[in-house]
Amino acid sequence: MNALQPWHIIVLVLVVVLLFGAKRLPDAARSIGKSMKIFKAETKDLTGEQKAEAEAESADTRHIAPPAPPAPAPSAQTAQDKQFADLQRQLDELKKQQAAAPADQPQKNAS
Image (cartoon, rainbow, N blue to C red; front, side, top):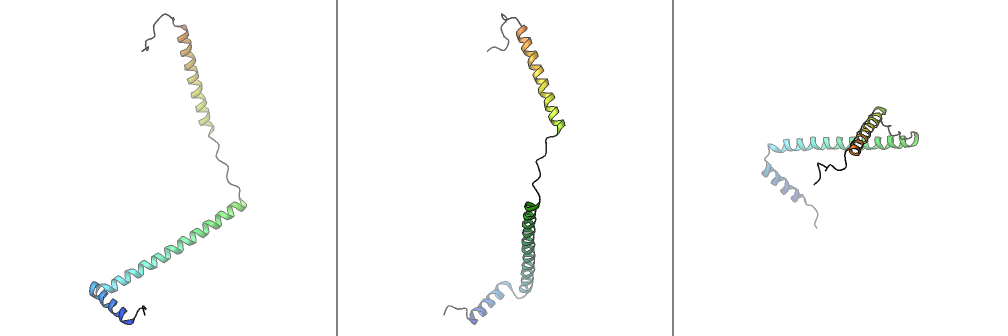
């Protein structure tokens, strides 16, 4: 009883024609068709890419070991060592100066 009757479809078509006009309907149908074609093509590409990625990933895990993390560059390590040595030397010099200063002089930065 609640099925779509032929007169329902006729009334629906008449309402659409009255709302949009007979001149715009072919253009609207054409643009909807193009949109659906593009949508289908994109979904096929997406599923194809996902399948290819999954196959490549499974092939990689079966045959190839993961790459080792890159070692730090030797020049960066030596630069850090040099900077640390310079800071250590400056700290030693400051300690010597502080020890050589007379103990009875008040400190300038005392609050």
